[in-house]
Image (tube, rainbow, N blue to C red):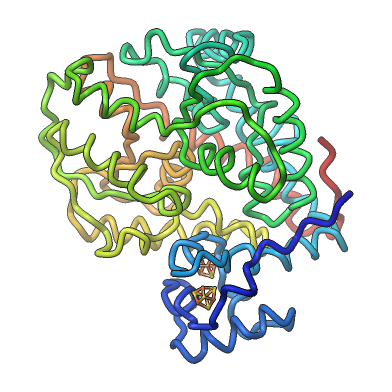
Amino acid sequence: MEDRCDFFAYESCDLCGECLASCRYLDLEVWEAREEMNRLQKGEPTRVVHRRCISCYACDAFCPRDCHPYELIIKSWHLRYRERGLPVRASYLMPASRPNFRTDLVRSMNPHEKELLRRWRETPPEGEIVLFPGCNALALPHLLDASFLEGVVISGDFDHCCGEMYFRMGLFDVVKQVADRLTEYYRGRFIGTMLFVCPAGLNMFRNVLPKLFGAEFPFRMRYLGEYLWEKVERGELVLAKKLSRRVAVHDSCHGRILGEEVQETARRLYAAMGLDLVELTTDPKGGLCCGMAAGCNRYRPEDMYRAAVRELREAARTGADELAVYCGGCQLTLSLMRWLYPTRQPVRHLLEYLKEATGDPAYHPAPRRALRILANVTVKALPKMLSRRTYRIRM
Ligand code: SF4
Ligand code: SF4
């Protein structure tokens, strides 16, 4: 296989250090950030980055020259995987494993949700407007069971993984296989526009898979929130009920990379529903991670817990009624960590707010589903914590 691991724009980088100096997890002065970048570029061991990086992806957004410092950091994880494989304790969390922490949730879903998943699995991805649910919405199918999505063809299954998790762990060889599989799957299909509910799926399909891994997709791609906002502006989606609550706004990693298209659109929708927004940071690129990505470096659940608690604490300090997210992965992760670090703020998804504002029945399964993940991970993954065995992902 062609060796794909160097995605950093060495020739554009002027070693300004802004990427790592802006990182809220490394805590570096600019001169230290420059030194670390220098070491990274030379392939030398870093003093801080590989110890403290939680794979939040924000350094790509911080770089003013679009050099992709994040891909330089995770390159060493790619080399680590090539050399040693993955520890078996990570296998239950991998999308290619059956079962995994998401597919195991299906058994606890109600019959209507199971029927939705069956329908989306069997519906071919063809039509003027098609929606890619992605694994987070497949774990929370009620998000897309909305009257305002009538007429949209929803097509997808756990097998059509966008590869986001593999990319975040630096498993570039596996991401290349994902790119090839999805290229083959969508080849020759008629799809006008593909909508993505999850910013991660959109960023993978639009940027990562084609630009870094050679995928080809014959359709236009849009964030679902933007599509819905246009409907609101045209008066086709009426937000009849005003939601008079204060919500702290959490951004997702891919939301920060995609910028206004996702971050601004989500905020416009929240505000249009009457929600009073409380920002957690003054810089839209500088928000904290939900904790999901923090397991990518050392594969340790305590890293995920610490990262999530940091965000839960920041949100709690605002005194807002709820914590608003637009990524299903953030909702599940933060809801799960609230069982371990209880706060008074339920974690609500943008689409749950939209359903409430448009009069759809309220249904909030994320906390119970997160508890189910916690129980399953405890039984199926934690016993492997001390194992030194490793394995390689087979697609
Ligand atoms: S990925 Fe996130 S934690 Fe890691 S260096 Fe970049 S900004 Fe910091
Ligand atoms: S990657 Fe970008 S932000 Fe980081 S040192 Fe290079 S030019 Fe500066």
